[in-house]
Amino acid sequence: MRAILSVLLLAGPLPQAAPLPNVILCMADDQGWGDTGYNGHPSLKTPHLDAMSREGLRFDRWYAAAPVCSPTRGSCLTGRHPYRYGVFSANVGHLKKEELSLAEILKSRGYATGHFGKWHLGTLSRDQKDGRRGGKAEAHYAPPWESGFDVSFSTEVQVPTWDPMRDQAVSPTRYWEGPGKAASENLEGDDSRVIMDRAIPFIREAAARKRPFFAVVWFHTPHEPVRGGGEFLAAWKDPYLACLSALDVQMGRLRKELADLGVAGNTMLWYASDNGPEHAAGPGSAGPLRGRKRSLYEGGIRTPGILVWPDRVKEGRSIPVPCVTSDYLPTVLDAAGIAPDARPLDGISLLPLIDGKAAARGRPIGFESGEQLAWMEERLKLVRPGKGRPFELYDLADDPSESKDLAASRPEDVARMSRDLETWRASCAASLKGADYR
Image (cartoon, rainbow, N blue to C red; front, side):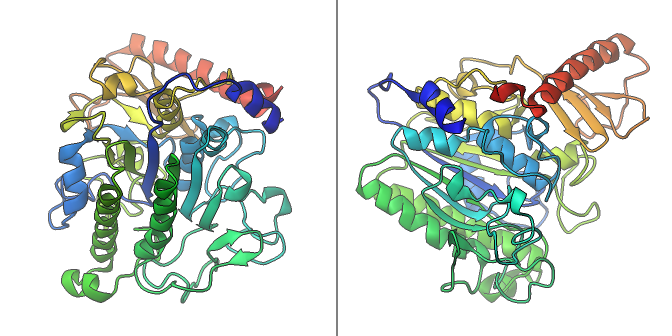
């Protein structure tokens, strides 16, 4: 089915003569909206992320598609809400073979494709115990090399943020480079550096061959177990700040490498987090936002969001419009001149916003996680925080901390938005039953 869809979608000549853009999707793990210098952290310094936010587009309302990791990651690669294909939460489901991933689409157009870091969209080993489900859940075997990635350096689940292969008290996992091939060298020290040490050679080789490339760099930082070391821990005396500082250094290293290779201008370099911070009382910060990881309040799903693309974004500016990780696929395909197939997408192309030709999203964003629901328009956000709980309504333009529930005073908006939400949920339910694959 996947091969047939690929042929139907991608057959025919490229529609544009301009060079295809390179694409890098960088993502932190459990980094809160407030865990950057540019968003006002009281002590953490993130000079490289701050520079990206000044020089490129700073998305002030960037959303993870879900308040936990696996569902958000699936949305990045499919452009679809996770409830369409069964990745409801972490360690649940897998990226189905029937789904058409961004890596598969770009690979068929000549891109070199690589995944580096945390995968969390299926198991990576059939016969060796690994992570939470590897070697004991054959039905969920879905490694990146079977979803369009030429090169992999990937773990099933989280690892310590320093010395990642040591002292894994929970769900020991390895870095896998292919079927039955676990990495054994250069696995000490800062985990973000370990990941970038694999991503950069991949980018160098693609640049040397003048091939467009698609690199997914999914850091484990600052997911627990949080550890720091070396100069970073010496400077910060706090493992959480130390590992985020180390990640920031790697983002600076990546940008320098792109510049040295002469490919920075034509590279879409994205940065975000997969959800909000783990703990409501720290060490992670959601800034002034309500909630944390696992919550559909803003603190659980609004994260840092940045795009640097010098050839297209000539000067830095902020984007106040709501955007979401499901937007990656349609935006990248639009930039590459590729039309998506007819299956329902929950993301939209952000090129009109990127080019300054639009000032609004024009389409709501739906969320579902466990018994929580949310429906987000340009300003208004409808939230049901749990089963049997009444809907709450917030005006995020005036009240980003979601402190003033307007549901009682605006029943017409609640009724309208809840109807739209249920229509969207019905569409997701049809997808989940396989309607999009027939």
